[in-house]
Amino acid sequence: MSEHLQILLKDIKEPDLHTLEGYEKRGGYQTIRKVLQMDPLKVIEEVKASGLRGRGGAGFPTGLKWSFVPRDTGKPVYLLMNSDESEPGTFKDRVLLEKNPHLCIEGMLIAAWALQSNWSCNYIRGEYAYPYERFNNAVKEAYEKGYLGDGVFGSSFKHDMVTHRGAGAYICGEETGLIESLEGKKGQPRLKPPYPAVVGVYGCPTVVNNTETLATLPWIMQHGGSEYAAIGTEKSTGTKLFSASGHINKPGVYEVELGYPILDFIKNECGGILDGKELKCIIPGGSSVPVLKADELEGVNLDYESIQAAGSMLGSGGFIVMDETTDMVEVALNLAHFYAHESCGQCTPCREGGHWIEKIFKRIAFGQGTERDMDLIKDLCKQIGGHTICPFGDALITPALSCMKKYPDEFKIKIERALNGNPVKATDLHYTF
Amino acid sequence: MGLSQEADRKIEEIKAKYPNARSAIMPALYMAQEELGHLTGDAIAWVADKVGVSPAHVMEVATFYTMYYKHPVGKYHFQVCRTLSCAIRGAKELTKHLHQKFGILPHEVSGDGMWSYEEVECLGSCGTAPMCEINDVYFENLTPEKLEEIIKELEATQPDIRYSTLKDAIGAGMKNTRSEVI
Ligand SMILES: Cc1cc2nc3c(=O)[nH]c(=O)nc-3n(C[C@H](O)[C@H](O)[C@H](O)COP(=O)(O)O)c2cc1C
Ligand code: FES
Image 1 (tube, rainbow over the protein chains, first blue to last red):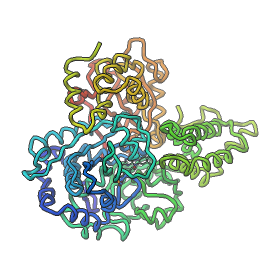
Image 2: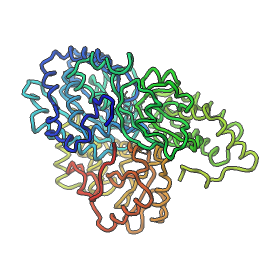
Image 3: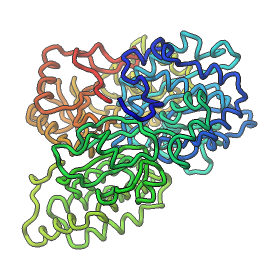
Image 4: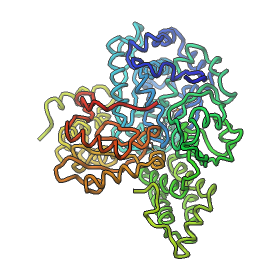
């Protein structure tokens, strides 16, 4: 058992936790009853006081986002749970949906009350059929009990909840891509402003929050915002789920207080590097954030500020660990392929540039690189970054640039071998089928 | 040519759940795919008719998302994750195994209609890498040997491991399917 405070993963291994009975047996659905007696604006104040920041990647303060929702438009307010979870290296929301769906529902109800929203939807990525089934069954149970529908928990508050299944597009995790998709269209992001809080689903004010963000609300409302704010660091409050994968002995989802040292996390939670090898580098927050080399990790902690000061980002908490044998040209190629494949195709720099970058990394990896290839990629990245409707373009160039910047020699060696007539053969590639 | 009466009933139920019936396009496409195997012209026409949009709009949606099949796939369609965490834990060996075993390339269907496979992007199962989704079920912590056992079992028992939008449930499945995350 973890010695860290477990807000989200408490009881997670109990086999009946996903049922309404199993959840209530452990104190579930008590907080929402209390919250329904509160002034909705007080709920927002409490969440603001907690310092909770969005767990979907951007880390935007949750209470502040809610306060942007206009309350006098005469239009309904919609609440969307973002369970698209497609950022490579991230698999934490899946655990919540599969093992504790009622916690997610209770969190959604708290947010719905705060926003006075009568309709919410959980958008779950299409491949998560099992988490979808679990969550959908939990919604059915909640309806049967009168916890959803007309007059939730015997109050006069009406709330309907829908489970929506995506169909395999990473970009639908971006909040406006998600909204477009939910409206029955291609998931192509919208220009902002207007922000979804003002113009969201079908033109109505809409709040989009990550699964983990909303699942944290029951604890905050039970214990109070200030108690949550006392955990973690000053600006990164509370606990966070980290999805640990790669060359480690104990991959999995771990909940730790923000501010926990990265090296301790690798040693204690991740169980150290596989087969006793040396650590080469990590990606701390999902594939869209810069790589950090082993020698850059001393004194760096798992919180927003510390990781940023070290030159990367906390992102979604997708923590990918690579050992000394990892080939960084292939890592760059692998991720370039991901972004080229997942571009929604709307903005030319991203749609075209993504494929070019992949093509150039491919020729370097396959022993056909030329002298100017690295500069060419840098130039392409310059033309993509900041020139797209959504942040996908910036996400695309981040791993490309950071792999080349941190490990330039690995690229240069392959290029030189190609120039000297001793190229890497396709059969030497480790990760590409 | 349409879908079953059951589908006609279910789509009305789904439409009523949303602020606007257009949101039912995606579930409608899933239902059409479930009954027809892949998205034929009839499937597109059915969705357009039920949701009240043009077939061109439905086609645009269907072609944007990878989980809608525009061409036939095998009775068991394997999706091997090829993204970073799986790649560095041996995903390539899984794809290689399928290639050799079935003697086909990605997106082709075996002669008996049983098998097809493709490489896909991160499936949110990186902690149990390498992994493969078969129809709608995850198979995690795989090796080529484990994959071979799974193929044998699929061949022998031919279980239903698809997610059914009509029934709101994954098929009864195989005795060994379970989530291994955490
Ligand atoms: C390309 C891209 C992909 C994203 N994918 C996800 C995702 O899978 N899940 C998620 O919660 N947020 C994702 N986001 C962030 C959302 O746009 C949004 O900020 C988030 O859902 C807000 O919730 P939060 O404030 O609770 O984090 C993504 C953003 C971008 C730019
Ligand atoms: S990288 Fe394969 S499941 Fe995430």
